[in-house]
Image (cartoon, rainbow over all chains, first blue to last red; front, side, top):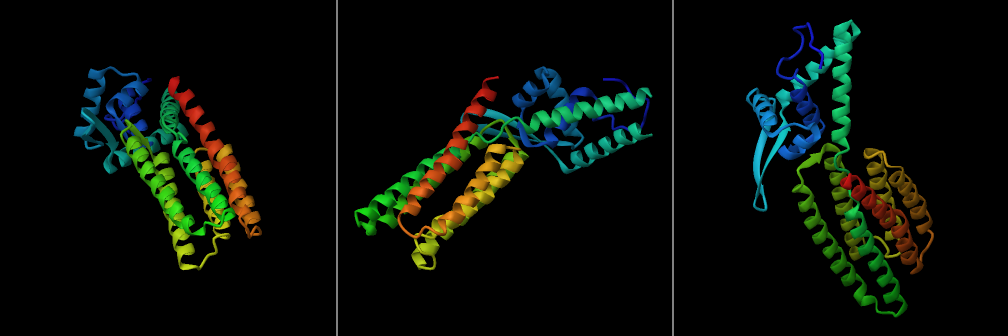
Length: 98
Length: 197
């Protein structure tokens, strides 16, 4: 992904994997860790680290549940994350239209 | 210029991920097949019971079959909820079908038990409700099969208003096969193919 020379863009979203996570979660109600991993072709460690960053920023939430005996971590976008993502897109559009 | 290209590149990436995510899991058509089988069975049994003049069993047969359909639907929905992802489209689609199912159950039983709707008129009404739900599903998933099925239900439902004898059950069973069970099977095959990729 090409680097921007701009302060307009949210640093937390502006990394390829985190942008992928946010784009995916904005279009689903929730997604489980392994689904995100497969869709974005990320490694466990890298994905975990980036999910944690977004979670700490309050952009995404996680729900840990058991399906049968298997633990599942379901991630979903928060209202704060949705607003941040919309702002990010709007700033991208501004950059294109300038 | 470089910034513009990079921004464009990012937007394209976002669009692609969103599009891929929306397509992750579509309706697999299993519930449509289940209700198709349940209703075809109930319609054919209604026709048969009227022919042999065993009217007293008709209402109970419907209660048992519709009850069974709901129990199996709830089990299937729970399994769907256990999947690793749930799209917003699936959420809206499920809500549409649950609302339609509840409306049909209330109108079907309430209307016939109260005597407000004659047994022969109910099928026409049900076809209209199904037309609505199929049209919404067709729009959500951009599915031509489901959108066309909706028109089949609306046209068939209009014809059913003129059939005031037991043949309404045969016509409805045929409509259920053509406009629900077969599209459901086609959707299921498509889903399995996509899952195997």
